[in-house]
Length: 251
View 1: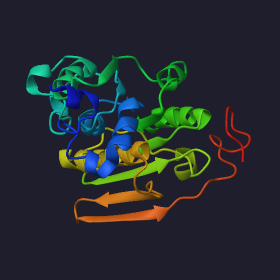
View 2: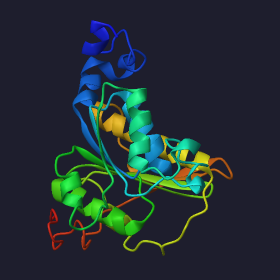
View 3: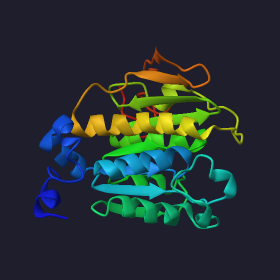
View 4: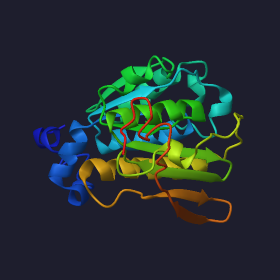
């Protein structure tokens, strides 16, 4: 790897995106610290594209082990990784893809006692979870720290994404006051590719200062090849971001 690539990537791995993001935008990406919550279907896609883009520091958290039922969609994990911790499996692939990044893996569980530690020193949080109770914990952590929260969820051929900017947009609890019942969702792997790519794009846009953040709750209908969005508004009585929320930001 040449000296110029080490310095700014102009003649190396980032040479196709620097004309879009600019050297300054690429440097902002290099300096960013990102938490990806989950190394499954969405987390695989998000982590791969953010590592490839040159995010300087990625903290990847997941407490599960690789199972054969994961392999239709969780593209960081391969047949030889079955029974390994997902974080260990992901670490090998991500550092092989881009050894220039700093990657911190953690096989702990995101809960009330740990979420502030995982989110305490990052610039943004990416939601790659499969359950709303943990999403709400991450949402509250983002609101408390006033950092962006990039939501994504998938089921079957369908998916959704939203970019949440505390103080400027509705938070996740404003959008979904109550989460759906817990289930083991059927999923087409390519749906994770669509939604995870949208989330990664939103992160890159935000960090580099390019474009406009996704201001709607975006819906993807892969069965009919259609995408739509609905406007989202803050709930002044929201228990996570309203004026009476514990650790909330007020109005």
